[in-house]
Length: 293
Image (cartoon, rainbow, N blue to C red):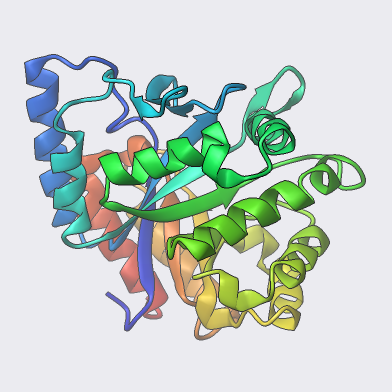
């Protein structure tokens, strides 16, 4: 590992199986064990989604049901054990939102629209199904230390502004419960800088996951610095297309560090593309790049 820099990875479908067979459960345990030994010390579970009733899904699998809040029973019964293994060496976060399109909008637009509607109906988090479901998620899976907010929109003038108060409510709730909160901005740095200020400043966020850092760092780093987010609290991201790209990872982060010395680490999207069996070599390649190649 390169100093105190984070070596992170998003995992999309490794642990979200619905009603897995005993053989699939055994495979998940092996994958969790391998991931815990890989060198990745930051693991984001992507992606959690929110339905209109506040229920939480892990990708397409029901995770926490509403009214009353309860585990759905469809995720693997050994998921706490899997996450516990990973959490022994890594910080585990649940990433809410994400990209892709649904009904002409980014998927996360609909996630946060559901939360926004529920907040209007239940202003008090103590009676809000979504926040009660979050508490249930953290109780059921205590290995999850907090939430990564991945709201992606494509119209800065309308879509993002719709969710300012929604995000502030989530951020304040996480802070009041002492859970980690990170942001994963995709575009429009002005919105995110404004949000950080309205939330009370950079201290409300553990760090920032900067998407497509090799392309957009020049767009985000200076505005984030103006909002009080130093380069050491930015973790730059890289999308990996498949196996055999370790050298590409090293060179990409070597270049990023040369441009932004002292950056807080790096992360890869996503584990599924190169596989748990190759996780150690990719974590090593990332660390090598952060160390200057």
